[in-house]
Length: 315
Image (cartoon, rainbow, N blue to C red; front, top):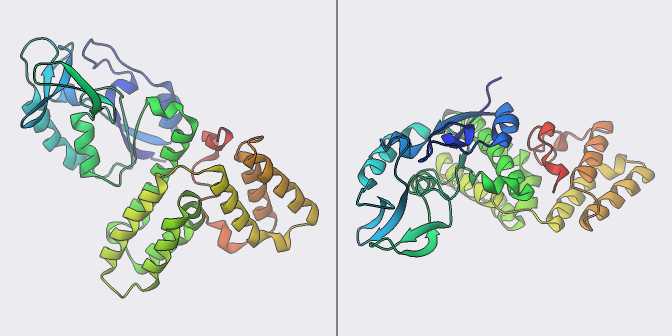
């Protein structure tokens, strides 16, 4: 089985490509995520011809925009980086996610140091040149920094988005786009959408109500942009409780009173922060298996990614 194609900063795979000849090996990426993702690595600075080792560089704000300049000396690598970016971006269209190295003037996703034209520190409002171009070129692509994956909530959200985007690209996008494939995708993600953003969930229903109102490709484009926007929103405990209670509504007629009581108790315990999400979710899945409900059997909210990742054990 081929893994989901995900881009990654090469140093995170242990490759010695950093300016000092070192790396930033992420064992979580290589030992856990690599079982499910097929990593495609890039080091923009190396690919732009800066070499290893190389002088440390940072971003300076000039009248014509940000420039990638050596910390010491006058070396300016902006044009070389932009040339690499223009060459690389068209080759990344089949990726389903990207994991970037933090604090890098090329790969950093946020809070990158910006200096003035003379090299004096100004603020941390920047984004690495490659990261900025990547996010603008592929606004639907789930992108995250490796360090932020240490946060269990951000980690779970990113990986859920990667699997959802892969589902869309495999089963709905391009030649696979039909009215049926679009509606089927929406059906699979109804409870996930409800949990992430009830507002967007309620907007997407009317969008799909009349698929003859405009070309299906235009409707699908509006849909997936709203869908991915919703999925970036972190799910609160209250929103999970709301989604689980909606799920329970489809099951309760076939559940024993005792089973329903236990499930409701565990949903309340999750809401109070006494147990992780995996506890009531496992009970819901068991109830669905005992008395299968067709509508729930395909719901990605119940199984958004492989169980072995253990992501709901910590949220």
